[in-house]
Amino acid sequence: MTASPTLTEDEAYEVGVEAYTYAYPLVLMEMTNRVTTNVARPDSASLRAPYNQLVHATAFPDADFKDVVRANADTLYSMVRYDVSQEPLIVTVPDAGGRYFSLTLMDMWTDAYASVGTRTTGTATGHFAIAVPGWRGALPAGVRRIDSPTPHGWLTGRIQTNGAADYATVHRLQSGMQAVPLSVFGQAWTPPAGRVDPSIDMATPPVEQVKQLGPGAYFALAAELLGKHPPHAADYAVLLRMERLGLVPGQRFDLARADAAVQRALERAAPDAFQSFVGRGRSRYVPRNGWNMAVARIGSYGEDYLLRAFIAFAGLGALPPEEAIYPSGFMDVEGRPLDGAAHRYVLHFGKDEIPPAKAFWSLSMYGADQFFAANPIGRYAIGDRDPLRYNADGSLDLYIQHESPGQDKEANWLPAPAGPFSMNLRLYLPRPEVTDGRWLPPGLARLPLS
Image (cartoon, rainbow, N blue to C red; front, side, top):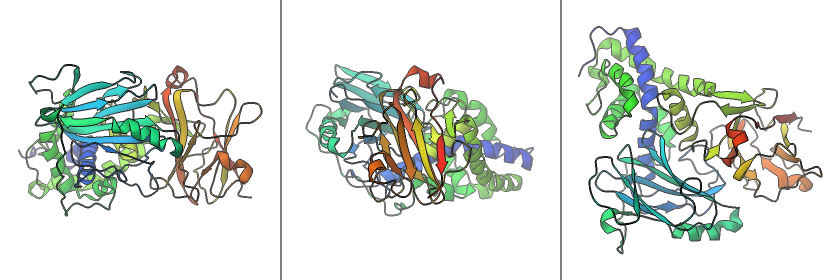
């Protein structure tokens, strides 16, 4: 299909910006899948594994982990990048003994369409099958069916982990998890080795690989992926607009063969769209005490394509608010950017301001690149499962700075890089006062270096 001959360059540019933003999560998921499944066997260090094979993190990510931005150091991950186009995948979870865990199912559009775990199904043993909506067949007794909106997607498991001393307990729980094709369920099965494609860039983070795609390659890949992964029911308005550019789901798109006005428009639209949603995405957050608090729903985006693109860029795989809340900190309490080279900071929680979470809470540190920042004590997050020192009145001070605050305060120290940084508070199973806005995190107070 060719673009409408009546489409002006300005009109094509407008639709191009919309199309780039709309497709960004799908393209990023595809590029991430290419990297994370391009291995022969599961690799716990990188959390990479062939399609439909479980991989378990055996330790928290460190500053070398670059596959997904703004990872956490609160839970040990268990991941499956699934492909259920041929048959369902049956996932088994063990009895977690009351320990918090969540298994979130995310489609290729990054919508969290289902969740298994403490909040939804409890912590007892269970079996469920991931299938495509059109699959017809019988499942074993006791297996619950969950339909994935797209043939590919992610299952991301998070098990509460109380520091390195708790690893062995969590490893035992991970060993009780299974993910097997329906055809071998209940049988002894050895997963086949994955095929490794040497042409895939395994060094550059996927978010950077997408950013480096030229407009022609980006829109061509988007059109191809749209043919494999069905759009959501509410997407037809944007799809019809994209058709005017010649972008049709499943049909080959060649920018070089498009109308000259469309070529010029999309060459401008691609970089402008990226800059727009990265910048404007933060408008979906309300600044409170220097923290950005989400005012729109994360994890289930509807037609809010800008927010969906921004969250994919800034925190691919983010949990829905019922599971966790992520206030992000880019400023101090006076609205000044955070910089560990120029300042020290203190985050003071009054006795009645301690983050109200039913499960647990933490504060994580990220460098300017959105990944963990290397530091001499290897601490990337701090929270209520650490041996924090509370003040006599029940309040709590956390020290956010590059250099150690002194031996007497190191228990409450979250090391910052010597330069720009940002942070995330994470509240797992937040209490109602968090989700309805009654609770707000206190601001970060800036101090001189000496």
